[in-house]
Image 1: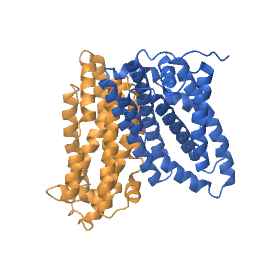
Image 2 (image 1 turned 90 degrees about the vertical axis):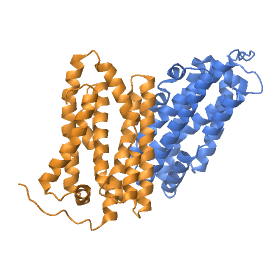
Image 3 (image 1 turned 135 degrees about the vertical axis):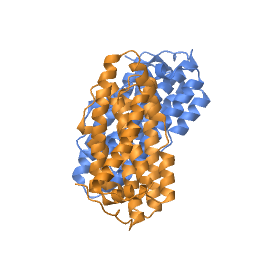
Length: 228
Length: 228
């Protein structure tokens, strides 16, 4: 059922910006922890070192986001608490079978999360939006994944088929997590609506979100030579 | 059997410095991973944030040590590889029962490791020694542990007894790991000897090392109000 209505008013622009910052900071914190674990499992020293650096960048971003939360008068612990377990929620839906699946999982998940956060940031004040855009512009992890996976996939059609299928499962899981977040937090709905040119209904909002995120995801899979 | 002999000549001062740097870099890398896991388990937002910062500092130190390895003409992967699993070796000997035991375990282990690395660094070239001294001078983690444990121990004699016992087990385990390292790597033996005023035999060397490390450990336990 598509129920058209005007977008909910952004009655609390600072509270809404804080919701985004809390989500982004919690996401970066959990990405930091998860990437540290990935670094420990990396099959080569070079990968280990680059993933460790990506992990360090994630915790640095979290610290910058926390500083912005404080700047806007928010309490970091309270602002991040609602999003506790956000990466774990995605993690638990599917278990990576080997290193390649693990690498692709992090890539798909983090890139989709970045797109989602950037989209939400469009609905916030210019300072917050600028900070989010600037922080998320970090290719450390994606460059590594594209290089390693491209090399592994070059002559391995079986791996390519397996990872293409895996990528399709992952994008579904990630979109499910985001849909759940939007459903639970009215602030995120308001930010999504504020990021758009026109007011939309609940179903249209999710359809539009999925369309935007899926388009970017498809481009990334194609960059790896995988059928999206 | 105490077998007096002259200290082995530091025939390869750069190779010996590289052994220290490889050990230190591997230690910092593993501390980074382990602290990221601790941050994820921390019982409060403040502790989580501080432990995450300590983890970030550890990986920053690792990056600086790797840069020094490269400066001295070493290959980072080869230089660190012999020490792979060094923290895990300590981890596996005893399993922390709760958060306080986990906090004390990290504190005892990391502080002893720092003392050990500083001592070994005395046997290296001034540039390496200065770098190690400078890098290890970071109170982020120890300040947190002392603050949190002191508060928890203030009115809890039962916890104090338990942690005092736990501290004694931990120091034994950590010294065992270091003794194993010195036994396996002649470079570390040469650095230990070069750090001392006089040449000593194998048993005297270990006795002296344990005496130095235990004295510092005792001071730290007393600072926490624990019977060493």
